[in-house]
Image (cartoon, rainbow, N blue to C red; front, top):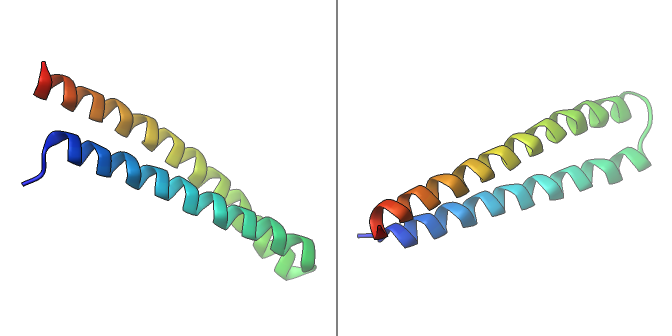
Amino acid sequence: MSTTAEKGSRSLDATADLKDLLRLAHSALHRLQQDVHGSNYDEAEILSYKLHDLRRDADQLSENIALYVKELETKAYG
């Protein structure tokens, strides 16, 4: 059985991993855009915009999870 602290730590780690993964993917798309042209560039650009939006959503999720963990810890430890 996991403690509140363990659950909170796993949640925070998972959001950090998600943000890192999205950052790496975004970086790969930017590198790809430097090396291709035409319709391939256009597709990479569209994906880059979508990924940018996903990164903003992941940032918001991360903030929400951090607040949730703080609330859980406050309830658990007074």
